[in-house]
Length: 78
Image (cartoon, rainbow, N blue to C red; front, side, top):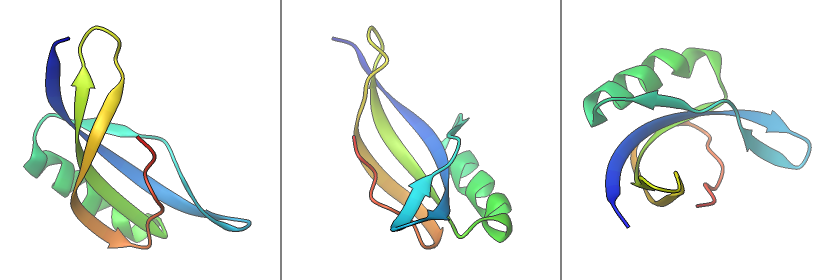
């Protein structure tokens, strides 16, 4: 099982009963993910950038690590 660290940015939106993640965006570096999150922050209730471990064979993501957060974010299920 080959694992690689990848970087994702998730905007969050308010839904009945809490917050829900929007469309995930990929970034090539941790710094890039932080910049994308900062740029998206004014348009969303919350935005978070994560480093995740990705199984290169299945595409499954695990072990999310929060890099930066702006505003309110929900729990990330991995």
